[in-house]
Length: 125
Image (cartoon, rainbow, N blue to C red; front, side):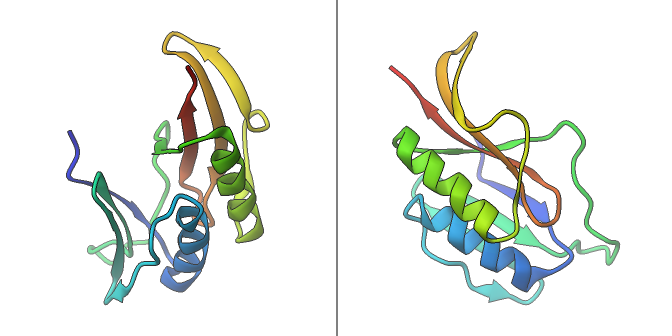
């Protein structure tokens, strides 16, 4: 459904340190900075982080969340811990299983150093 997802940053080096660590727990290789942006490429999609092209400061999307698929609750927990260790902020409930309309999900939420809301998700069962 998606070709890529991109979030903004005001500090590309800080964002790279954070996302290299967080996405590394999911087996994603570190990005290379290409001018004002960088991309994490996988067989299932591309995640990009960059400075806004219009030169204005990056800001967070109110109500937006980007979810990263995990293979296990342990991987989601490692993702969360790597995020906190590299400048992210834990938000919402602590990582754990939640029951919802889609069934049981293991969820772990963070704000990245620029304030973007991201989530590690493992669909249970």
